[in-house]
Image (tube, rainbow, N blue to C red):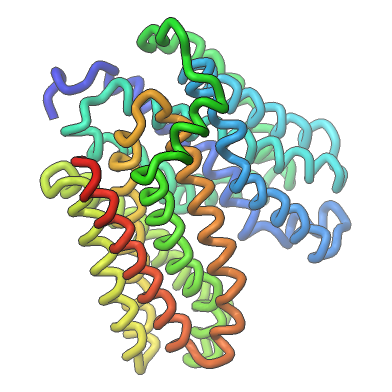
Length: 386
């Protein structure tokens, strides 16, 4: 990648990637340490699940908040996002009650939902489309590294200094990020930026955009249909216990990293739509392979391939979506995030009833949803060259 293809310094991209690692770490660490937080707060599992349900619901409302990256500028969107994230972490440090914990998690999640699309829109503005896939894929390492590196580090802080320590450190780091973002240079916004409703109207009245949203919905639904039940399947079929399930989860974290690496290597060479299509087809093959699993090794290997190919599909779709509506880039990206959230919600809703008929039912539906994604992607590319 030549320097001429980038109008943003590599050090700045590294800084923004580190910011995403921090934000993603706080998001992902709640799941493995949920029992610790529950005990510290004296809350029931049902009460904690309500918090996570509310937090997930925010994903559907993402475009309402993230459109600030279009109406006020990318820098403003990133600043607001990190400010909310920092405020949320600070609340937990100040007051350790169930109510403040709930508000803090909602604030950090809202901050993430505003920061992420504004950041990706900024990268879309600054990096030419021919190499944007690689840059965005490298930045997506923040997702897998938050799980492989960030969460274990937070676990050490939690063990040595108490359950609120990760939030206190993150609040300090958030303040540092705010200072760094203040020095961010960006292209001058247009004389008349689109309003929030103008951006929504442009996206939701466009067939191209709707096909892109349908693609995102279908691939996420296909993944969640398996994601929700694979642990139960491993436990019931192959007698996996806690340690073995933890190892299987680590394998999935590694698969995310490999999937992102594949995108960085392939997406700009093969083309964005072609790489997404390849990922979907390979994910279908992975689902077929999982159906043939007869041992714990083949099961974990099948899950590894399933998650690698899903990550390949998901990450390669980001640069593709970033070019559909350049003037409403943040709103388009956040709307895609909302479609993924709806897809996960749908997948979670049907996964358990399907599993009553056996994993093969989940796999069959996952394959059908992937085929639907391929149809939507084909309809998209027939109407717009990307």
